[in-house]
Length: 498
Ligand SMILES: CC(C)(COP(=O)(O)OP(=O)(O)OC[C@H]1O[C@@H](n2cnc3c(N)ncnc32)[C@H](O)[C@@H]1OP(=O)(O)O)[C@@H](O)C(=O)NCCC(=O)NCCS
Image (cartoon, protein in one colour):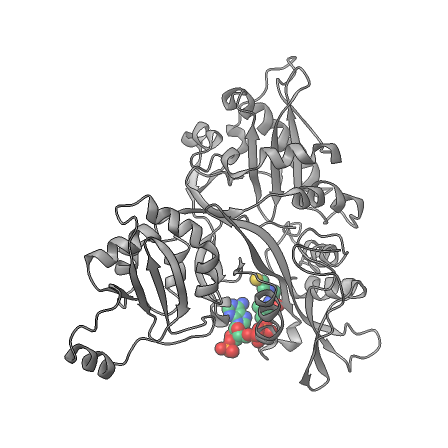
């Protein structure tokens, strides 16, 4: 199969790590061994439902199912050749030869009006006997990042262990989304009146619904008016998560995402819901046709979602009155009508920060130049010319340069290159020589990698000044220009449990 720009085919790269260990890419034949490694590595991690009270957790079946699912060859985000593996070629008979693994997803997204592809490392684990030997570092630095950069991913992101990925060229910058809220007690959802059937019901999805799902999940439909960076829910996403995944489902732990169509009392399709369970139950998407009132549909829909989730996720033999589905996270954003309707019963919760790696600022900026030019054209600085020179002090892992130079000509970005700031001596001698002419220079300095946060609009220039002592701006006009180019914006990067 072809996933985005990636051609089908076995990747032949092999790297010898010594002591019988090699790094190589996967085939479908590795599915069970990768599943086994993940199940063992995540035994003690809080992913998936907790074990019944008093029971020691066994191998993690939810994560085993994910690894096997990803290597089935029908995923919307990777082919069966996209898992980077460390294999112990001296493994004894019956011993799992796969001792570490990391895979690479390709996820379509947007930055303003421009489409781009995100690379997403996922399913990362090392067998307990092989930890702290730098295996994940080698998998990321020698396999995953080069493969992702080479195929043109402009950004990589991961949701993961706090502080772990900062070692590998990532910084916290993208966010899953704007504010989540928690409904702490499902008893806050009013009961339906007896003997009256619900005004809205939910039905399962068929392949004929894919076009409807694509139409109902565009950014403007999702009630996120200030979102500028997000993921695209395209046909491949819907086809896989609502159909293909069930065709090849292997266990009750497989396919944790539930999509339903909302149907009104006349039998007409009027909306979509997506919920998932990842240790907590969350509503990821809820959208209705413009003609339908959230006020009328919200509680009928929630009541049926609760019934569905309890039936799906509660394990057999659960003690009477207990349920894993006892609260609900609304991952819909504060502008969503459902968030507003439930505002008095819910508590705000932080959204997740995502590790973000932009390997080359020039490559990224050249790609999103139309968005930056649109921002300039709408501003008081429309038509500006000059050079923006940004000093990042030194080149660090995860960055392509120690600085950046952007040349603007009448509001257009005509050059974007890595740049090295002149030394103090060069600077002073230049000043002594007097003004050499040339373009107006807008100069600024930012701590290494911190510019990623400004570039993706997680924080604005004022917040950069507050949060990083190294931030410096040449003058007020530089600040104005950077404020125009890099405003704070909202993100909607779902962590997508494929
Ligand atoms: C986290 C995990 C993948 C690390 O694999 P690894 O091959 O041991 O990692 P590396 O050897 O490449 O990196 C080790 C470095 O990371 C640090 N590190 C290891 N586990 C860490 C953790 N849980 N949190 C933060 N840092 C961690 C080590 O201290 C070490 O740093 P050092 O070199 O300065 O001593 C492995 O412990 C594991 O499989 N854990 C369970 C599954 C999991 O949590 N996967 C990641 C999900 S996002």
